[in-house]
Image (cartoon, rainbow, N blue to C red; front, side, top):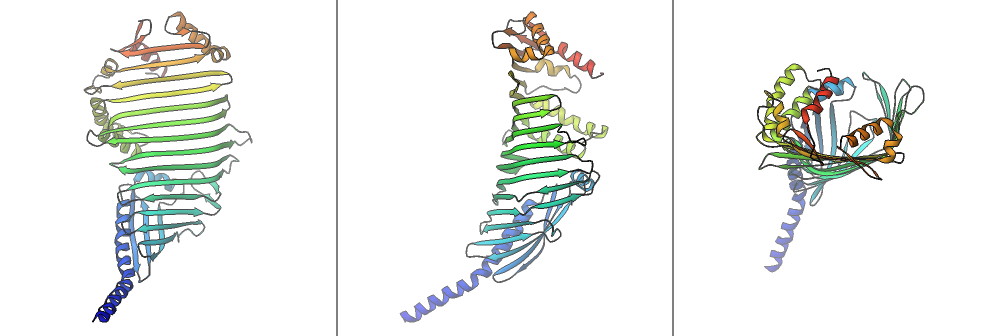
Length: 423
């Protein structure tokens, strides 16, 4: 009897083993279908075209289409495809699915995506390309040459994403003789798409950027550039915040050369619903027609009524031996209403501070800077020492209040700017 039970147990195990690839295939189909449906949104339509499930392998075809009118129109104008079909050969493993994906409509695009999807739906992927050449025949034709690149990352069923990318070089050539060359690009990030916002961190770096105009000269170049983006969303308070950090080791244009450029900007505690609506309106109407402006104004009013903060945590650069460093922070308190009917309420409600430093050498190298800081010192709005010039002030009750107690109405500073704009 024991022998018969053992044989039965072994037989059951064998039956389970034989049936398991079918179970994995069924589970895998559900996982892949759910994953594609999760990608589908108001900007990109994702769909499973076909799913031919077999015993050990399955063949899947998916389609991804741009449906956002503004983005689609822009891509079509540039001759960039707005629809991509992807073929995947899926293999059923013991606890996961492995897939090799290609793009049948673009055989000249040498990208292959290898992915592993766990039965819980979480996926790891690696996308690699060989050297790629692309000719764009849109309104602004150009050719693009990209050296072999690698993308890696993960995606969970909750929509959480991580990625890293490495591209040795990108060259763009235009019929006019103009060129753009970028070398050693890299990127990494992690986050999740939530309520229309990307929540998380991203960082992109580039070792060098060179340009060439029709005369063969280089009007613009940059070295050791990076961009960091961090965003958070407080769902309970419906507040969105983002920080943007730009660093450039060397920047050269026709006006000269600057070094150690740093820009660190924060937009804080913005009403997420109003901000999302304004972002959508701008993306759909980049030229902002009168109708689009009329549509946006109520959300602008709500944005100010809910209050927010903006701050330049650091803006600095070096020109030769001279230095410039500045930071400022302004806040619109919650309850600032009716700004469309009376914009002056913004100035009376605004609070904040600013701190700016100009080195002695920078002022000496540029006469217009020297004249400006000398006038500020004479008016006792700035102080001077052996290192340079310092301007500090607070914003309060519609005035710019300097360290010595002197006050200047903000409206007095805005009127000259408005006159220069022709208002």
